[in-house]
Length: 196
Ligand SMILES: [Zn+2]
Image (tube, rainbow, N blue to C red; front, top):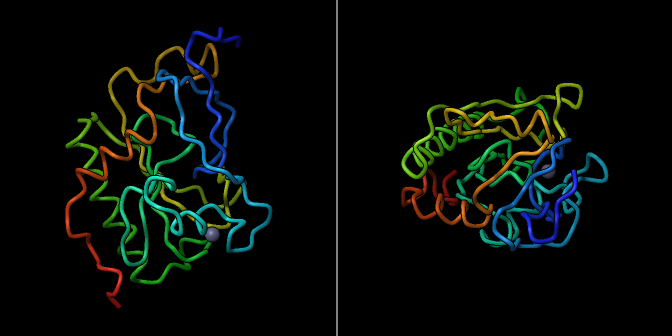
């Protein structure tokens, strides 16, 4: 679709976390933080080539990190299905949910629960979609490093835009959403990093 220069612009934000999809998105505020680097890994290896490995080494602001636990962390999805779409990722580069340790499994679950409470407090959604895509065949854009999606839903959020224009209007910048969620996140975190 064509967007005049004075209209909301399309995203240009390489480096954030998330699964690229076919949707274009309209950002209503006329600014966007920009972080260098590619958000798509070049291979399945851990390390700087994997955004979910790289992000914890960034500041919360640069990495769009909402909260950090001892085994997992919460980050804004660069390719949100809706405002407030976050991902819960283990720090460890692991692809298969069945391979998570007990500590990782518990903390991914607890961070998801806390994120639900925080998003309810901040944005009062009517519901959520929660889940993870296991394997590229199941829709995972970054299959090598698992990540649980948490997508807040509001009545009427599935309007005509995705169907007509393959676009979704997102009324709030990711950086602003991150700051709002992080400010509402309970302190201290669920598990201190030194915990075993
Ligand atoms: Zn990784």
